[in-house]
Length: 398
Image 1 (tube, helix red, strand yellow):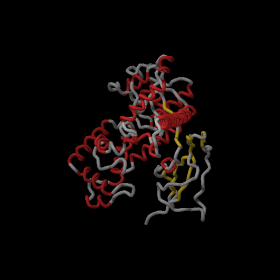
Image 2 (cartoon, helix red, strand yellow):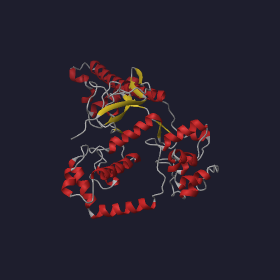
Image 3 (cartoon, one colour):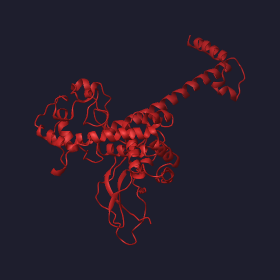
Image 4 (cartoon, helix red, strand yellow):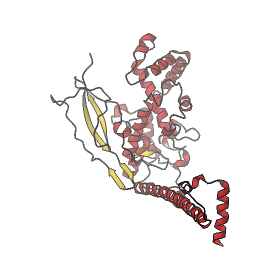
């Protein structure tokens, strides 16, 4: 018998939502609040399933779903971001990025969760594909607006989602027919069957064996302890608190250090012992000394997409001159300017057509020629008439 679940909403943070229109700006932002709607009362309880979307008229706010079972156990429900998917026309969520083009701030966190909803959407990211690059090639036309080729985060979340499904709904010892019938509610049936068939295939078994061996070798690898918050967001928070750019060692310990001493790994202890060495050289800092040097063109500990060149300190003027810098207010102004330019171009085309039509009518009047309503449509001119008109225009100028 399925347990009834009560939905408890915890209002975590507000989004910066920008309404762009020719009439002006309309920024909507909700106040941060820790108020919770109690679900322990009698008539106020509304049983629902984990992951059900909660509709609220304040489109600019995000909510975290806290699901509580009858036995009192609280779990976090599925992130659906219904308010983000259903933003009104003309509204945009302004996401700030750092020098490495990583999203930061509360809006950056919402963008990360939004990428997760895309990765779990079978219509956008099918589970039938065995590799992420196959999915990108097969859906290049359909997902071009989602710029899947540019967002590495979606690929990581897509693979993590498949790993989650395998851990929760798959067993090597189970009957394959039973596995086919045990399709999760949020997965397309055909995609689930293809996924199960791949896990049972020789290629899937071989890939699983290699992954298990890799995990055994890396069993002492420190675990990320900062939850869903990305390295880029933590980096910016450290930068504000320290009043300087944190080193990779400081960022690594912030993201991987446990509060309880019993959970501190040996690698973390070695890094902590060497953290007084604030060596900025990535090949010589404590993280590199303990974990080994980075692969060519990659930097560990800073999140996705960071290259060694992103960490070098550029000259102030040269760096600023090479960027197209803007702010939220300037973004709105650029939008309005673009709209006005389009209107001006349309008006200029109308004026040019009207001038040509007037010249044609004047020429016919001077020659005592009759004309009708069709003469008012310049688009029906033939090439000969247009060349003749050009000659008359030259005569008029003389």
